[in-house]
Length: 71
Image 1 (cartoon, rainbow, N blue to C red):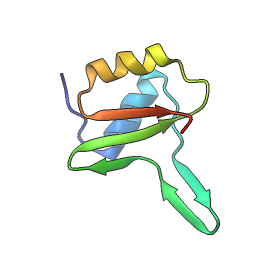
Image 2 (cartoon, rainbow, N blue to C red):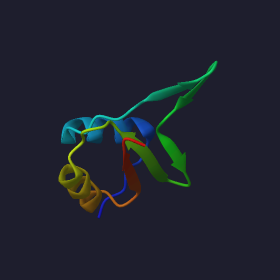
Image 3 (spheres, helix red, strand yellow):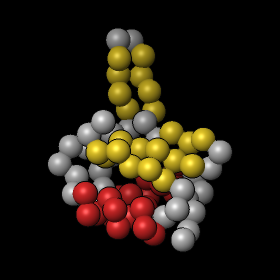
């Protein structure tokens, strides 16, 4: 398996795979970037309606990412 390197790399590969993710969430006056990185592991939130098989195939290729759907 391969590893994703940066947040920009994550966004690029997800876009190439056809997976749309939420990039910001606003709660009150606070805005959060929804591409989280912790010690080289990434977590993203795919938009509602994202195909589970597409997500599963993506995570088979890339080792260091977790994709939540409509979270």
